[in-house]
Amino acid sequence: MNILLLGSGAREHALAVSILRSTSTSTLHCIPGNPGIASIATCHSIDVTNESILAFCLEHSIAFVVVGPEQYLEQGIADVLRDNSIAVFGPSQAAAMLETSKSFSKDFMKKHSIPTARYANFDSTQLVDASDFLHSLSTPIVIKADGLAAGKGVIIAQTKQEAQETIAQMFSGKFGKASSKIVIEEFLNGVEISVFAICDGNDFVLLPAAQDHKRILENDKGKNTGGMGSYAPTPFATKEIMQQISENIVAPTLQGMKNAGTPFIGCLFVGLMIVDSKPYVIEYNVRFGDPETQSVLTLLQGDVARLLYSATKGSIDKETISISSGYASTVVLASKGYPDEFEKGKVISGLDAIKPENVQIFHAGTTTKDGSVVTNGGRVVSVTSYAPTLEESLEKAYQGVQQIQYENKVYRQDIGLKGVNQLKLIS
Ligand code: AMP
Ligand code: GLY
Image 1: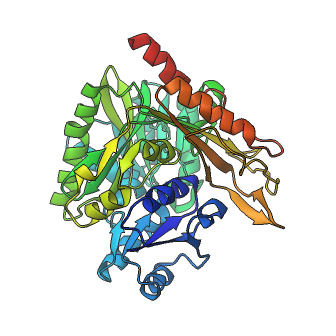
Image 2: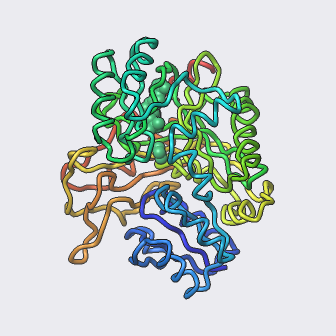
């Protein structure tokens, strides 16, 4: 089967490695890809409009498309391809609203009694109502732009005045159209985890829970980023909590989407806050997360391409994969300045060095220039490892990190530490 993967991050590099392990993959193409993906698959830099992608699929006899980033789903790529009888792992534009509109997803959760933070939605004609509502909450207060805002659309205001200013800024176009509507919600204080459910519209497989590290600095300080590291499975997701997530969150979400005539096919990524041993949904994403995917896929044995393909056919093949018993960890190497304006063009060395066993490098913001691989993005590469214990997997990942050099390499030194401490606490 000829497969096309859409995207260019470390998440897609990890997906490419998994897809290529499958015996059903004949050829793997990627649009646009990156130098890491180009070393194992054929990358094409073409326009990423629905029309160009469809034309590409027809020309290259693509039978199956795996969509990485949400932007393609928001532009309706899954609908266009399905209309042309091409199997797609990724939801329709309508089902993608679980991520592309936060007010839609909050109303959906309320309707289906899915646990989430108390909230209200407002548009720019409702400034007075919005301030009344925020005065009914205690600080900190969470304010979210309704639409996609490149991961920057959530502000946690420490005071009511800051909340008031944030609302005014959002309504005056801080995030363009994405903040013409907003969600104001109560702050949940707990432990954050990420869970992926591979969904076929009716049924699903829950993958091991991961923990992301969103802030740029150690101890979760500094600005929010796309994610600076991850590990899985996280001990914060106990068996009981995973069962609650499955029964009280993922199952009713799939049922609700099916009943609405917009069945969810793809990876449902549930961002959760565990408060007093109960999971609450912070947000849905409608695709794999980055950097969680690098860790989670490393734990999967078996035929991942088959798992994803069977989901697109409405009959998920749960037996095709199994979960390794150890731990996977991912450390993200970033560019100086990230998540604001960052440096580019720094020559990267050590990418080809022999890594410790079970350590892999996934490219993200890299490009080739004059025969060298150079930095070209905020998040440059992910270093991912697998080992029987979490501590060993972290140690190996950091050994891999030391082998990669470029000027002003930035990374967090405390990835996985919360997990290690929690494991000590419960052992
Ligand atoms: P999102 O873009 O929705 O993932 O939000 C970004 C980050 O803001 C999340 O990963 C959480 O750390 C934080 N966040 C969002 N909503 C809440 C909430 N209701 N309570 C506490 N933290 C939140
Ligand atoms: N790791 C968070 C995300 O992919 O949105």
